Length: 342
Ligand code: PHE
Image (cartoon, rainbow, N blue to C red; front, side, top):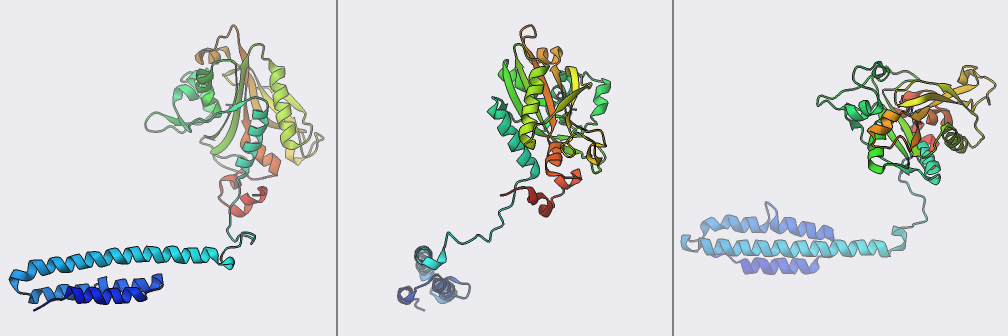
């Protein structure tokens, strides 16, 4: 039995010359290279070839197959390129002025408020730092003057990991890292996601955001702290904000405060949002405890500093009038997208 690969090649070249589109090349591929295609048929004939010629004929069929494969791939690429170019060239295919039908999504309210606060602080010379969500006990507690078994640990019901690390309960966990990294003087803010084992309701979440800030320099006092907080809050709320400090206990600040702002809804007269007190609790803060500065390698004879832990989640709720904190982690895009103009 004779096998004529040249005849098949001729047939192939003839068909190829007529092909004008990528769809046509696909059917050519099937006709020649498909399971029931001409090459397979030729292969099947091989059994009828005299034994001493089998090797040589088999090799010829294989060479033909490879050459056809190569030609088809190249031709297909060329056709696709030409078809794309044709689409680009035809005016109606792409009109940049048409409104897009793509849903581009929107920024999460926490992202919006975080960026706004970051912009304000960077304009006042603060750097923005990032810190991990998984931290060790030293950074989250010990370096912050909270030794093991200190009752202050009970205020932050902590998620511990099997490897001894933990999910950071507050952004203060980055203080030591930043002091060690930059030394004094330093002005830094560091936003972050925090975790505490809280049972959730409209006001409580186990996952929330804070934005911490520290400023360490010579002669830093509480009045610097009040100035920066007032400036930032007045910018965020686009109105003059009155603040007040109440004593508050945190082992890593001395003295420590709770910073309240006059209720942005009633202007301080008293309303349901501020439980008729005229004040909203927003930001624990204080002068950094000397033990914390020392742990960060800062010379306490020369430098003092303040720290604040702004509740970013709470600030977002206040600014956007969000009544239920659970909405923020809900993934409800309809609710979450209404604050962003993007
Ligand atoms: N880290 C504290 C908390 O989350 C808040 C705080 C920060 C207090 C900085 C004082 C200074 O409870």
